[in-house]
Length: 98
Image 1 (cartoon, rainbow, N blue to C red):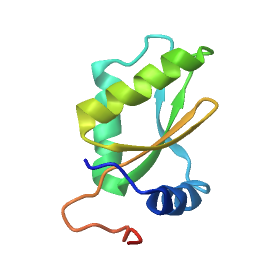
Image 2 (cartoon, one colour; image 1 turned 135 degrees about the horizontal axis):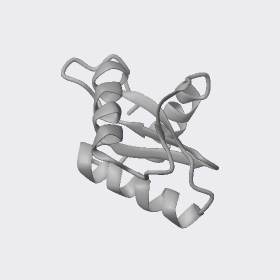
Image 3 (cartoon, rainbow, N blue to C red; image 1 turned 180 degrees about the horizontal axis):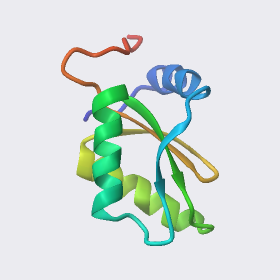
Image 4 (cartoon, one colour; image 1 turned 180 degrees about the vertical axis):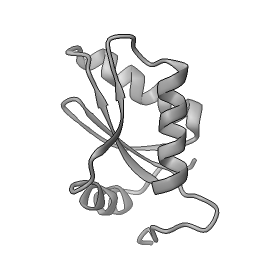
């Protein structure tokens, strides 16, 4: 996934605002089951939120990076314990600005 432009990232942040998390990273950390759930969410919605239970910002940042690497998604934002990622599907539903 190529990186997003600031305008695209801003657009996706606006779309993500009203969405609910589709996956949660719990006390077990980023497991294969969680990654599978994230993949399913991306396939269905393109833009998803993930709730990360860790209180450590560095851990959440590392999870975001690992998720994006594993799924080919682009990071949109991280606010507190919420991670937002985007990956277009075959026929994209979300049309990104320029």
